[in-house]
Each structure stands twice: as structure tokens, then as C-alpha cells.
Image (cartoon, rainbow, N blue to C red; front, side):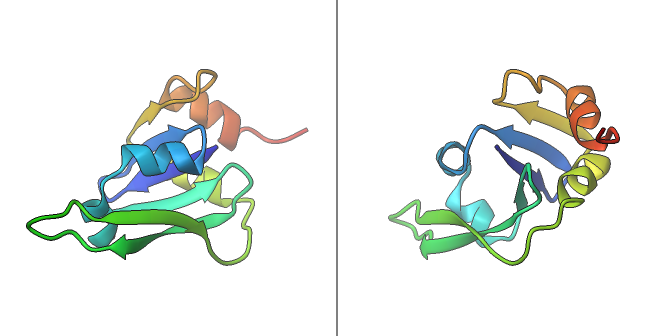
Length: 105
């Protein structure tokens, strides 16, 4: 599962890195619109492989970078003002808050 927080604090939750790559646009990655992490707190970055030009929509990939921070998913959810999800068990921002902000047993 990959959490993507955009510049407007809209959270999108994707089943996988591949799903997020299919949904997002290179121009937004180029412009630094997104922050990424997985459910374990592993941070990711968008890496532009081919820039956007007049004749190309460009290409990018999402790759892990840096050390895992278990608090990162909760930080993303705390900052989010709205949520869209491709993960059936997390249909709303309230579902995401229950999952990532609730104390773990």
C-alpha cells in the first residue's frame, strides 16, 4: 500500500507503487507535488526518467529512499484534508485515520 500526499494535503491511497505510478502524472512529479510513503513508514520519492516536453508526457518511477519512519503514515493522515482510496478497506479519510492514528495493541 502506498500513501501519496499532494501539495494541497489531499491523500490518495494506492494498492501498490505500480498502481500509483499508473494514476499520477509526470508533470506533477517534476513539480514536486507529492510526498510518498508505504504503510510501514518507508519513504519514497518520484524519480523523473524522461521529462515532460511539448511532444512527450514524460515518464517517472517511484522508488524507496531513506530510512523507515513508523510515524510517517500517521503524519500523512494527520495533515490530510481529504482522501481518495483504491484500497477497499480504506474508503474514507475516517477509515485512514482509524487505521493509522489509532494506538497499536
